Length: 210
Length: 164
Image 1 (tube, rainbow over the protein chains, first blue to last red):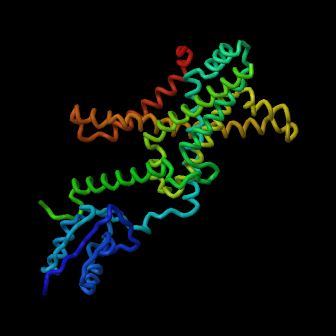
Image 2 (cartoon, each protein chain N blue to C red; image 1 turned 180 degrees about the vertical axis):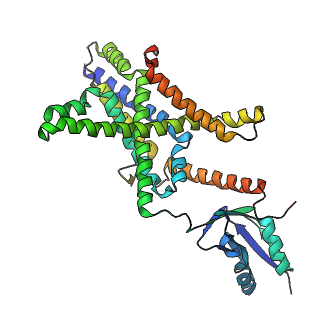
Image 3 (cartoon, rainbow over the protein chains, first blue to last red; image 1 turned 60 degrees about the vertical axis):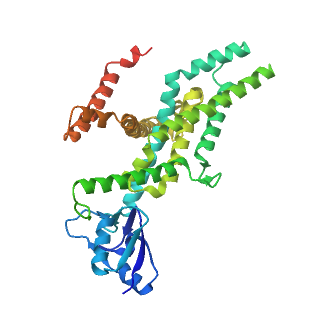
């Protein structure tokens, strides 16, 4: 049997619907021999047991050992991550109603939190007095608290928000991802790495020892 | 006169833009919303959450910059939309709204405070310095209860009067 090379690009994290993890779930694979590739893709790596958590970390070394054992003349080239976090779907899926409650809850926190933060900030810097003094100094007239200064400040704030968040009323202004979407992806990366590290420390990840 | 007004316009506009940039950078840098979304597994609704932050800020600006125009309670009490029951109904309704708003703001500020502390890595550094291996759970409980006690203390004993 001639040497064949398998190119293996593990994903950082994947979701699978069933409780069986196959090699094809873990990322992208390529091998010139289609028949061999199909056999590799269908190989079972792990099955979620009864008391398992819904996450399993699978190390690339374990995969290489597993594949080498069955296909001794296979060369494995790894390109992607050195481990992948597999999450099982189905088990802790929320009902639509619970999901809606959660969304309302978080929306409420975001709304009230932003509301409160900006008011506390204005209170902190004493924005009313600052604007009063400034208006009097520049125009030489008394301020009634709702002058052109306050109005243009509010407009400026709104424009700043639009520029910053890049959307209003559910419509995007440009095609870029919004800042919180970017933060969300970073956060997911961090979580995946933390999960992988924790599993490694607790020796619960599926990897070679030593 | 018109030039002075125009000058005020430019000044206010610039101040508004920079303040919004500053405030949102702080809110974003601590990554609160991704955390809320991650905790509740509602990452698909990030867009809505952002929208809520936008509208919350705009409402807050209205109420704190133009307090004279934000007197909803007084307005409803004078208008009496539903006759005589309006005042008592509004008492309960506004009480519920205010307590819910307080709860939500409290959650937000509590998370914000700890997120900022965490961004400075104060807790990991501290636990490492004193060699604290476990007990992280009681540390977090301690911080939460301490914040609760401090907050109650602050309002109960009128600490805000010493502020200025």
